[in-house]
Image (cartoon, rainbow, N blue to C red):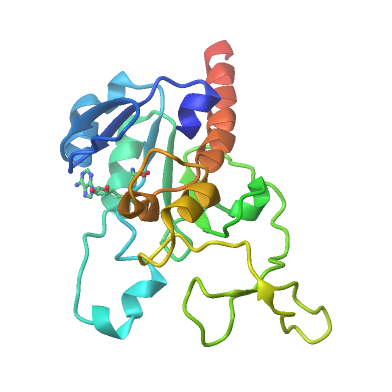
Length: 214
Ligand SMILES: C[S@@+](CC[C@H](N)C(=O)[O-])C[C@H]1O[C@@H](n2cnc3c(N)ncnc32)[C@H](O)[C@@H]1O
């Protein structure tokens, strides 16, 4: 959605059906699709599964589980195609590039995501997180507050920040947090705010326009 808002005609690829996807959709293996069709596109965005890179994989009940690690093969393939690309993943993933935060776009979430690209990407200023998560409480039971600058402790109240993960959020809160109103809760938990990709898509478009002139 963010790339669409930035001005791109978008085609999505996923190995699973995505009946609520708002643009042209191809079901299939993304790496196979890229190898066969990547050269037909102006630019490519990839969001490989993040579970194998997320710090949450260390939770005790996930011990022994494995997930596909697709970032390296995706980057290798994208470089071989030669079109501008952006790969997105969780902050801990083995990617270079910028980290975007919901607070940079006025959204009520943090949702840090890292973006590596074949081009130089800019990011807005990362303002200090001014709302904190209550100690010892459920993930969405957090308390508001502005961090006390001298003690580093929170002044508790009701928080407006939403963590869109783990099935612990209400759908309306997840929608408001990400700026998305066409997904199920499971899909929201996998998605990133369109504000992020609109911001990056604008840079990508300008890069492509300069390439055409050059
Ligand atoms: C981080 S989610 C991205 C979700 C969605 N693109 C979005 O932005 O809301 C990763 C997605 O990768 C899909 N996936 C996993 N392996 C894949 C593969 N080999 N080819 C295509 N899609 C794959 C999963 O089904 C999942 O929907």
